[in-house]
Amino acid sequence: MKILVTGGAGFIGSTLIRLAISRGHSVVNVDMLTYAACLENLTSVANSPNYAFEQFDIRDRIRLENVFSVHAPDTVMHLAAESHVDRSIDDPKNFIETNVNGTLNMLEVAREYWQKKGKPASFRFHHISTDEVFGSLPNDPTALFTENTSYDPRSPYSASKASSDHLVRAWHETYGLPIVLTNCSNNYGPYHFPEKFIPKVILNALAGKPLPIYGDGGNIRDWLYVEDHAVALLLVLEKGTVGRRYNIGGNNEMTNLNLVQSLCTILDRLKPRASGCFADLITFVADRPGHDKRYAIDTTRIRNELGWRPTVTIDEGLEQTVCWYLDNEDWWRPLLNQGGVGQRLGLTE
Image 1 (cartoon, one colour):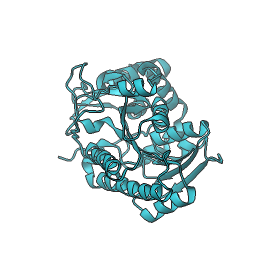
Image 2 (cartoon, rainbow, N blue to C red; image 1 turned 90 degrees about the vertical axis):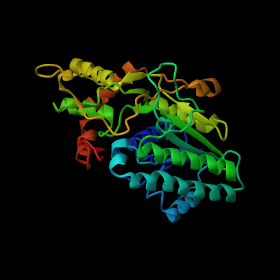
Image 3 (cartoon, helix red, strand yellow; image 1 turned 30 degrees about the vertical axis):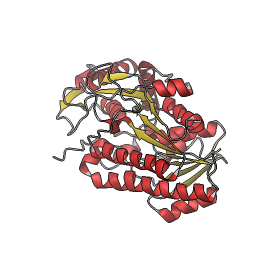
Image 4 (cartoon, one colour; image 1 turned 180 degrees about the vertical axis):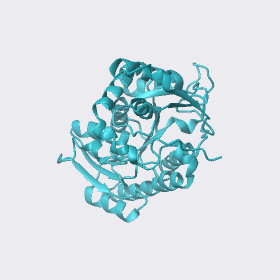
């Protein structure tokens, strides 16, 4: 199968591409290479005959039409998006232009391509989204996001992703485009861009810098190891029911404070400080505007219908992630010079 992947030089996209090629699929990676993209994530597959890379903005319709025409993909996995919540607070327009207008462009070009090909039954437009579109849950372990949870986005980022989700469903209902849609919880693991929470904590700790925690650290997230996510994405692509949504979560809820403390404990064991412990660096800072209190995903549908379940526990995943950053300074060090990385963003009132 030939898969057109958008945003394939990003964290989740590159993990997906490495897995897809290892399984014998061909991949066309379309990526604009914005600040958070990193082609080094794909070094292991860059010379594969089953891999092709096209650099351009998905809002460029002519380039997009040409890629569909030249590469003739069997299916599409759409991951390209601006994704950092704090940046969306400072620059919401960029998130609307990429996540909404870019998705609209993808849908229209994919629809025209699918129609010209005679509407093949095997074609899929797989839209990869986030649990943040559902808003915030109460601090009640029985309350979970399901595929039927109403949308309630609270940030410009989640609002832009919610908008793109609605467009994808509309193109299925109106035009018959065969889509599948997934909403995932917070991903983590190797190659995670340094501005995101877990790598930021690891790298700040290694540098002896404060470990900032928003508010009181009581915000709860469900953490999904990125390689488990990639397996689920391919499974939904191959076996998911057309028009159906699947929630993908790690079933690993932790408060932000407990997560940072766990990372500090691992670092204390693997690379101890000259004096004191890493938890001494924990610093509580002003909370993010519109900060959702809790995310947690019910994965019953994907478990029962497709047989997927996460395989990496939070303890295993955090250990593997810390080890990867300790062993790969040559990957993350240059990325620290990207604009805004390491700085507190999203303080606009």
